[in-house]
Amino acid sequence: MSGGPAGPVREPARQRSLAEIRWRQFRNAPRPVVRAVLSSLVIAGVLATGYLIYDIALARGVNVPGGDLRVLAMTVYVLIVLVVGSVLTWLLVPQPTGSGTTRRRSGWSAALGFFAAVPVAYLVMVVALQIIRPWFG
Image (tube, rainbow, N blue to C red; front, top):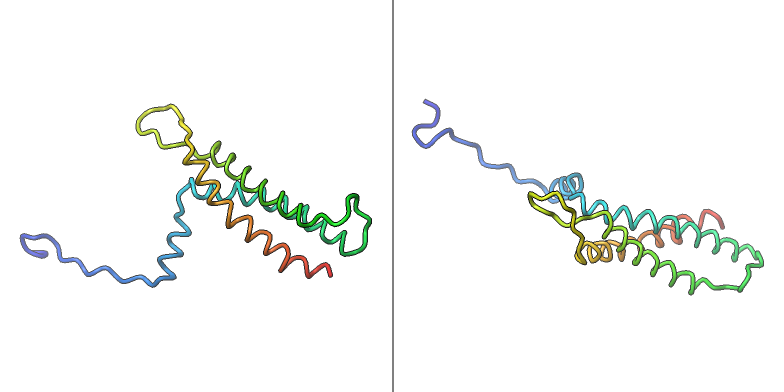
């Protein structure tokens, strides 16, 4: 007999390390979260590239119309990433519908996009200014 009337005997589950748990969560991220982060990441990358070009031009002494507006440019960058990230996530992440075929949208999708856009905007600009910018002197 294989284990008696209670069924087969199973080995206890192996304890995973914290790194294994986080790697598995990273590989199996929910699609709405991936869409929210990617929409914010794309817009942040495009805008950070523009900011980086502007910053390098100012550092090299190029005469830019309006003068040094880096603080304004950074403010506009953050606002655009937050707004566009929220709107794109609202468009790309429909609310679950159950068995129906209609797609619904709610403010929760936009909130997901907003909260995904906040760290993405910061991290993309840190990479642009602290890692990529020094390469251009």
